[in-house]
Length: 297
Image (cartoon, rainbow, N blue to C red; front, top):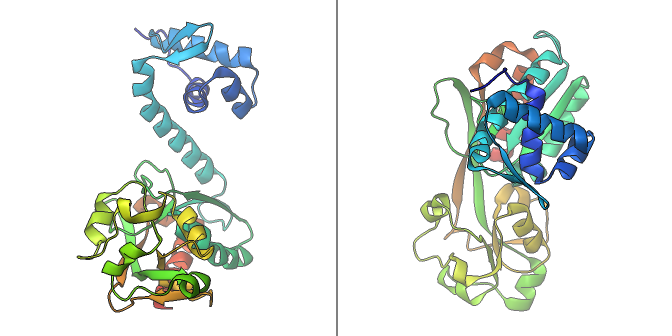
């Protein structure tokens, strides 16, 4: 039985140990001493009345219960970060922090110039950009605004559809000159194709019939969209890319446009409670307008 109600600092230390894998690494991440962090772990165990780590000469090994607590500690971390962002400015001030979640490619390739323009208008706003191909949990406030390629269904979210991002097949001009162009989708099997390492349900749904876009045909396998994009630009092979990005580089060649053109629906999303925050609302409107223009380009 718990003796006391543990403070957030104990859970923060616990989460750091679970993320970093050792007391020493977690202490460095938090800017603490290792003895202080070890004391936090003992205090948390005493407060909860449980054993979270098995201790040995090799270090700490998390128990099954510790593994189960990670998701709850991460929820507390998200709430703490959201509180800090909210407290960083008043609701009517155009200053403070706003956290955005986006996919790797959108965050690294599309958003920087859009956010630069916004920063020039509102220099008091700090941007926090989280890149992941997994959607952020806006209900848990993992982010304030998210760019999503799937329509959200939760009633508590405000979503604006900004258009479709077109995906197509591309290769660098050097690759085409060295290896030629495929005449059909089936002929992709004869080329160096850049693709995924782990197939997802989304990939299975979007793959056109007759297209040999399967793992065993790939010469470059990665689940990082940025790594795949870098391989394509390095003339390694043929890959799927956003047409809007490809048009920025005259060295990239569109292949089989009549056979492969995939629409990627794009949404800008935030929690409905944040409509009262002027800085979040301004950035939401800016992103929606700029991404709509990108979709039309």
